[in-house]
Image 1 (spheres, rainbow, N blue to C red):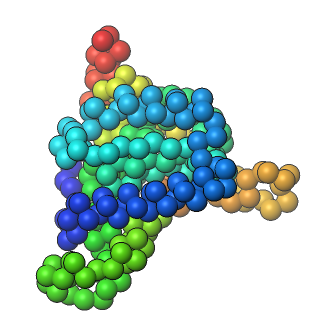
Image 2 (image 1 turned 90 degrees about the vertical axis):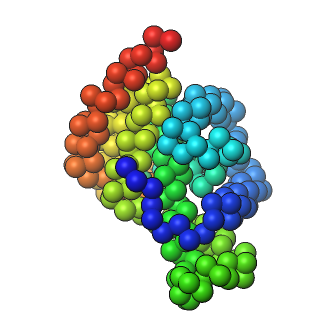
Length: 251
Ligand SMILES: [Zn+2]
């Protein structure tokens, strides 16, 4: 698997912009008393992250220098992401509506970390900045200093709210399963997650639901379309990742 090609923006620029966006999101959540309310779930997420992160340098040596963060946002949204530089967020909606086990959290977190390690966000931010400033690549390369903080912030936002390419999804699935397996989580959970996700996505978006019921399709599905081929690719990767899981369990 290859890293993305269009990496016009330096990694440090992308990571700084992402860190600022992330901090802003967390501040907004805190103001609504929606940040890290459930201490037990937060601790669980952070423990899983601690197990996965040491294996991330296999996919990107720079990750050693990242300032990882894991936070839990109280929201019905079925969503989770990892911004460039290791800024992870889970929404309570994805934990509750999919009733996730630790193995399932690990493969989702691993998948999101995969996008960051393979620099999919960096590539997309680079594309967004090019579009926003409307100038040629050559001009952009020589004028990076002039790209406003606002444009970078916008690009960082879009980097977690637009769908990734299919090949990027496949690559991140594989990274996620391998990270999980090496950390001692069952990579077969990846298949279960997508089956659960598909089922949730198929429920009719029903405005007449009881108050508090879900009335929107899961956001995670709009950025991570599920396909039969996705599950097939995951199953095809099992002979590679299952032995990693078996040996991690013995340690
Ligand atoms: Zn993805």
